Image (cartoon, rainbow, N blue to C red; front, side):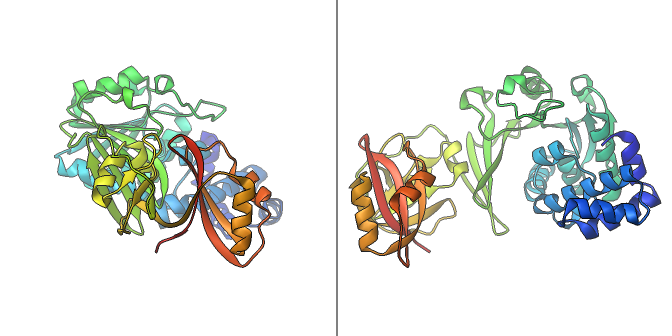
Length: 394
């Protein structure tokens, strides 16, 4: 996609091509391209429209029905914030008294649009010309161009004295290849600039990859890990006046938000395995809040380095899956295979932490046959490879 192709898509002819491509989305791409060309759509415009139709279809999970009118890039869609998360972040910024916001590295504008919907005046800065133009087009399509404007330029050159809040989502993919960047020090804008924003603007939020090393969290900042329907999707650093707690895990499930907070430095008690096993949500684990969850569940760890919790009684919680354990045995393929055969187990889910075994290979080696189902947990207890057999608790 280039600026000329984007401009073509925004003409009446481009809109017609997008509508036709949307009707063909999900089918054979070669047949779709042939159908558009047969309808008189020029090849270049047809290719651009079909790409947008594909991306819009994929974006529904993040943006809902609004995806049908957005302009997207593959890399931009990968990094864009889900609407439910962006809306909640915008509401928190508005509640903190942010009226004007700089979105440095605004990408396609997902977070800026959420802030604008919350009534915040947003100034977006984006280095890539095509992405910047798409963000402006997305603001116009959403009817928010009066609250969200975009300039193409260097985020580090923006005068942050113009605003009372900053949101920064540094690029975590390399230009051209689209490969993920795992070292924050290689982000764009640079990490030292990003972390220095809080010293210049007291209300600063930085979106980071969920694998962020805790040692890189700025002193005094709140680090939040976000999960959506069991998937760990992002982390954010709330700096300065916005910091409320040291660590937070925010989980979105079935339209509801749940929050677990704590210091992130507490250690959970250790004890033997018990009847019920809890597998904490990845956001809880990454936020180092397993001990806080253990306190809520009256649970313990069986190994201090492995985030499985054990309790005598089941407790309903949004922060973990619960399994009822029927068997705990040192790992032995022969013994496990015999146990599952005796119980006519033909279907298993395999969970693992602290085990070098590959679930796919183990599934093949078990040679399962039967009409029953079971859950297997591969882990370590007191340093020894162990397998737990159980079933999910509703």
